[in-house]
Length: 178
Image (cartoon, rainbow, N blue to C red):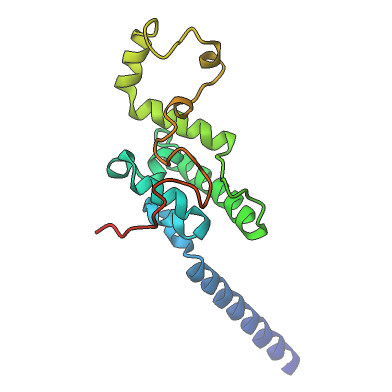
């Protein structure tokens, strides 16, 4: 009988220790902030400070958050949180194992999402460009049909032209938005 009680107490201590450690990791990593749409969640990892600071100095800072550009916006919550989970996993692995370049580049999947969001957000402009395609944006150029992205021409939107940690214009640090 005493052996069973010892096992029960030991199991209880292990479960409580596991829950405590899990809660500590969630708190220290600010994990719950990733469920929000707050752009500050993107700078929980210091390596994203440059992207955040350059976004703050861009025209998009007033009208589009990180989530509105980088996650699916027209496909529902399930698709949005699946993309968030996938990106979060990839980011945590890269940042933990230090396997990222100083000039952080967007993934193919992320680039596809951003392109879809650019076209969706700027639909009236895109419609005008398509209507006038014989006059603008060189739609006869074969690279357009093979996947030219909006930022191939609009390089400074919204993160500046250079993506290095120490060379990005307007990476003047994170400012508090009130």
